[in-house]
Length: 348
Image (cartoon, rainbow, N blue to C red; front, side, top):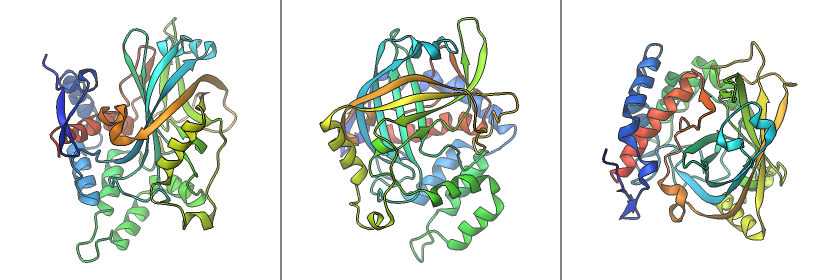
């Protein structure tokens, strides 16, 4: 099979992508099967979703269609024996694994102000001892705003600017909120929480439920979050109006120059009756939790200068011992990311 190696455009020049990160053809059959399964319940297509994002935010050549603005970081991860009880993944074998991380703002604008109220993301690519990869893509909210791809599409459509004002139509956004109750939880979360002063002061959540499988093939439903050892902090109302446009990138780069920054991976163990396929519902408090490992980042750099720039952080890139659930949003993300990535590698 021929893989793509060059293709995206970085500031007008060809950008080289690692073949292992671009194996679009190898994934084609898997993605087609996923799309077919999703379409049985929701006819929304990845092309429609990506197209709506392009209408809402414009097309920025070589940039991601969502979470366009970001910053790269490099480091490692060490898993724990406690996690190995539940998953046979090499992620938890105890070795030091290289990690390429990307922090980002939700939305398709690469110049959006960092002080906006909305999702911020952490995406991780782990390289396991056998050469395989594990991806994790998270946001700083414990829940998502859509339980189906149609809600995601409708939100993007409601965000398309009115040609006469250059801004989204307030009536369209009110209608979306009134007709999509699954959007309420995450909207309330961001209404109550100001952005952090640094990515290093934020927790990040899997939002989806996953399946851990151990050496005996026993399956456990889990969610995870990465908890900042620097502590969680929020900007004050006064600070929101005075922060520079790109303060999150600046703060992370400055913080890593002072020394390594760390997050603990905390895994929550599901119980019967916990939501398995709806990322808009949080699990009840009091569930058993274990520390599954520690992420250490020692260096950060601008997005286009780092290794993260060429990575498609497909959340269904998983190691043996970790599997997805039938969450329609989780399954929809993979083919949608592929569509966005295909546009990027064409320089569009």
